[in-house]
Image (cartoon, rainbow, N blue to C red; front, side, top):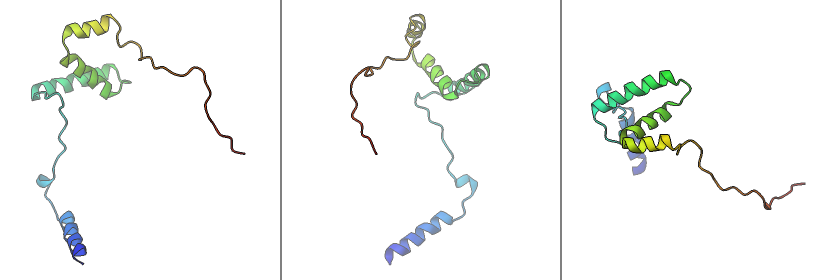
Length: 105
């Protein structure tokens, strides 16, 4: 019986009226600990890039912006000049062999 009373009290807390100021708002993640000026610059540049590349997912443009900002220029130039990211990584896949399967009749 005590559990039922506790559940009813919990339900009352959920259904209580809360003003808009009391409702917690979403806080955007900031894994690179950018300051507010850098975040504003990032948002502006990503939005500009989205206009130039409308078929590109926004997350890919954001990732590219973060890579350019967090890595030294010589490393970025090395990646671009040597086409390090031009091809997908090669995965070893079996070209031959026997797979065990079953037949349902």
